[in-house]
Image (tube, rainbow over all chains, first blue to last red; front, side, top):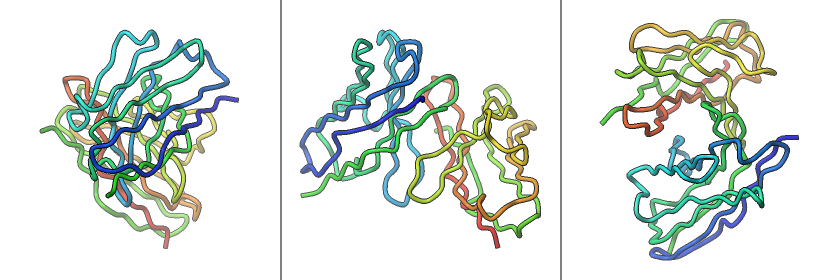
Amino acid sequence: QVQLEESGGGLVKPGGSLRLSCAASGFIFSDYYMTWIRQAPGRGLEWISYISGSGDTRYYADSVKGRFTIARDNAKNSLYLQMNSLRVEDTAVYYCVRDLEAFDIWGPGTMVIVSS
Amino acid sequence: SYELTQPPSVSVSPGQTARITCSGDALPKLYAYWYQQKPGQAPVLIIYKDRERPSGIPERFSGSSSGTTVSLTITGVQAEDEADYYCQSADRSGAVLFGGGTKMTVL
């Protein structure tokens, strides 16, 4: 069964850091681009970053460029999002998503709250 | 900056047809995708490449495209279709874009 499971969310102070992880199973992880998408409370979806199957290509939304880093470990079937210099406006549910042109498989999400 | 524009809400009675639109200048050149999100759940892909339906998605969901507007049509709406619907595409730089979402209420 194809599955994605995020972890690592929590409460962090503004300016702090957090690392999200996503464990993938049920498919050949290295064959797929992977993406992080977030959703602030009561708001819409916001794409923030993607990474190619090999990890060679990465792309970021302007809102997180320079602060967030996407990475993957294909040997561990895992995707990561290192989030630094966190801001209150980064508060959201963060989804790990498989990207095969369309975002076809989503994890349940992990909540990140940035608050003093 | 480039945007995808959706109506904030639509209301429809059970058994009727709902149409949700998404407008964007680049849509004639780029594919659109649609996602359904129910409260407390992750989004689900329901339409890809303007009009293709993933396996397991009911036939009452369909997509179409005309110029700068793409549409999601739900024929014979059921109570379980009450959800938020998001269109998605990309801009010319490759950045992914989502519409603001449409809340569909089944009366």
